[in-house]
Length: 435
Image (cartoon, rainbow, N blue to C red; front, side, top):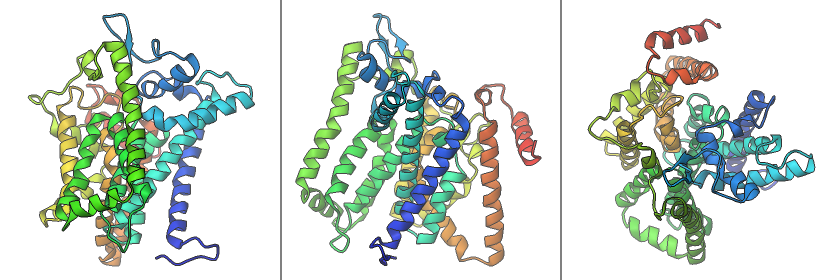
């Protein structure tokens, strides 16, 4: 697995770079195919995408947070950004790239002209590619290389991860997918023994990545359950973790300092706008959790953005996860707990269908972990008869074809109350019939 090539790069890293470039290229070229006529349009589109991005033009061009572009008007006359600055931290390098492009090619330097849009398409393709590589690395730790690789590619092609990498690139989900993968992978590396020692970068990134993951979407803190379960299940787990962390004190301190900075800035903004250092911004709009009217089955199976309805690949994945959890696999139990809490929290949200969402978008954040049971599924299939593998190949091809067809046809009306199963199957029929 770790043979050297003639240029001194081990084959495993070469495979990872190839995987990254595959996803990066497909994501970027697909995004360009959709937005090339007006590559700035998705930056200006009102809604969540603008809410995550508007921090950058407001701070670096307008030099003011008083009148950002997508805000809630408060009773005190101020305008509150419902969304945190977490996503904008990851977008920042590519915003500067767009700034340079605008200056060089004489475009408006306003944060919303074509160079900024192209730069953000490059950015989302980068995070999608890196996230898939991390999903592959995580899955490979608990499965075979072949099954992990196919699982990673399948995650990109047969789920709504592709949609949020291409069609709505400024939404938070691909960024959270990347950060969740980064946090979980680095956490597991910090539990490795002397035969595969952790490095300073793992300490640094687990702190910084975990901090940004929770800042982007506070609900993402449930992801921390997974490494906690792994630590509790390992003999001397906490001892190993502590030894590996404390061995890189400088990286730890540096990571903590950098991780705190975005939270300090966010807290300052909340205090400036609301007078409170900590603010539940959604509550300002009376958006809330209601655990007395939960909709757990609707979140999974409703025609209005049900996760399993629009991403049926996850049905056998969840079954595989349940089987391994029943066999008392700590890894499966950890993933299942993360999935369970995420599911229940979304089912208690006042808008359980998550607005204009393609297929339960909140679960996209967890796909790096779900690569593990998906890899287990493929590993099991590889041990079966040739006919089973051929049938699986046809089914997988069908799921990818269906996914791309649904993505191409999706529009906001699919999230409304009058969207029915009859209308859904009419769209599916059109996809299968080539109409």
